Image 1 (cartoon, rainbow, N blue to C red):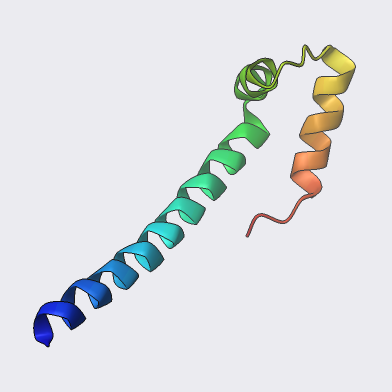
Image 2 (spheres, one colour; image 1 turned 180 degrees about the vertical axis):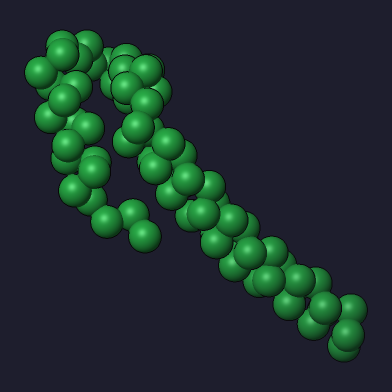
Length: 69
């Protein structure tokens, strides 16, 4: 019986732990992008967008107004 319970419990604990670690990492990356325009530019290029200076400023102000915390 314990041979079934322990793996299921550890799987659930790993999934929950991984989710929270992923959320923490994503928030840290988004906070870093707020102050670093080069990171924003790279992210936009990966998504297929080429931002000009005005669009970059708009994106930075939009991200600063977001509540990541």
